[in-house]
View 1 (cartoon, helix red, strand yellow):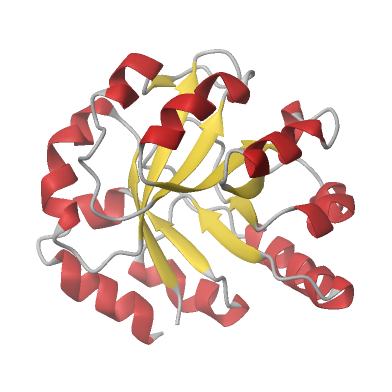
View 2 (spheres, helix red, strand yellow):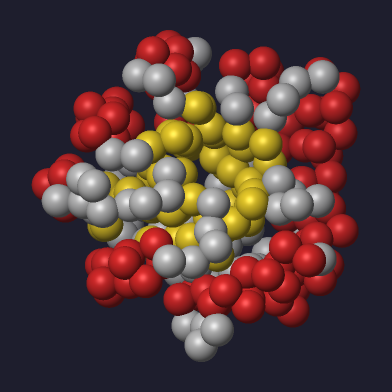
Length: 211
């Protein structure tokens, strides 16, 4: 059964945390942006510190930043399970090792233009791959359907290497396009606008799980 991560991308969604705590989600997906790696900004260290103790579900944190290790101490004080960094800023395995040293599970994300094969050498070192199905930085964008072939190729390589790595997908996902997405069996789905705007969010979550 697919796991659901509820996205908290922009400041306008902060008031929904208590409501989301009551839903049948598996994770909170926190998008941290520094205004450099992507042009948008969300969740400074000061803002993150204010949420200590607020999240009743574990955090799945996506760091869209140039210097992710600046955030690790703060994330350690939160209920953080996954820390995902971008392949595009990864210079070597040292940063991956540092994430593990903090006790986090380690993820790598790729921009839509980055070849999926780029991360194959790292699969033995990580726990999760986050495939961006929109250009990162802003919510509400349409789903990029070429992401499906990327899921397929990645799943095949994970099987070839016989590693336990989850495949997560984030961006533009709704019930209509998930009918096709579900055929590719992602392990974790990030829901943002479609969940926040839903009048019956638990019913929506159940429908995703049933596909």
